Length: 223
Ligand code: ADP
Ligand code: ADP
Image (cartoon, rainbow, N blue to C red; front, top):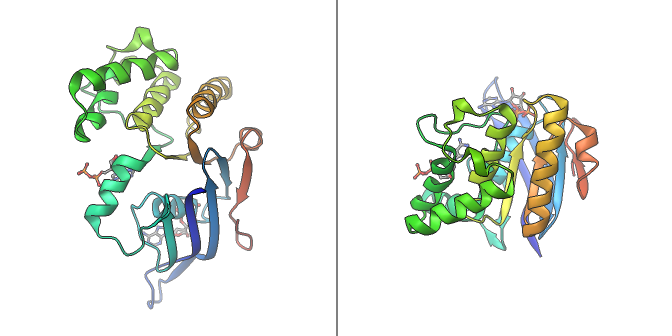
């Protein structure tokens, strides 16, 4: 079964005005349970737009977004926010960790927001951080972490509520090649262990080649 299906998705910014930009048209894309899909696109091809639509942060003006078998297209803000919190995890090029909180707290907080008791949230956060080799960094604030460490914490935060689907936009794009490789390897290990599904945008063809399938988004092609 598919965790995510985009069916005939279209998106135009500023429709009906001289500034109209058609970014996506008739886009079909699916991510099966346990599948890791690479999204490769030249700059401006609509990668961020697609990830925002898949992440229920933006709505398409044509087509459907089906998450875990549920058509989210007609759902209101409340249902979409709830689905984001419970079913989706996000990682970006920059870690966006809360600077005044420790690594552990950054992974605890999204769980508290979902009603997980604090002791259980702390235990899960510690387990995730240990899994990515950061047991000794739990109490460090983001500013005291290296770029690769901060991205690993951001990844743990994305997994904090055990999402069905991970959406990542250039998750290692801000790291030097060696660190990028290391962070990606850890990320893939955890994804495989947990059977997580993921849609990961990257410009790095070597990393894309290590995923299950590559979807190219371009002027003419769609996946
Ligand atoms: P990518 O992430 O592949 O670089 P984006 O999805 O950010 O592409 O943008 C695709 C196109 O849509 C670009 O031409 C961009 O300028 C345009 N675009 C993106 N967001 C908006 C917006 N809010 N309003 C108008 N045009 C936009
Ligand atoms: P709330 O403010 O009630 O937490 P939000 O809609 O802001 O609700 O957040 C719900 C989920 O969506 C959170 O996990 C949050 O991290 C994520 N989220 C919200 N806005 C964005 C955004 N612009 N980009 C990525 N993730 C977002």
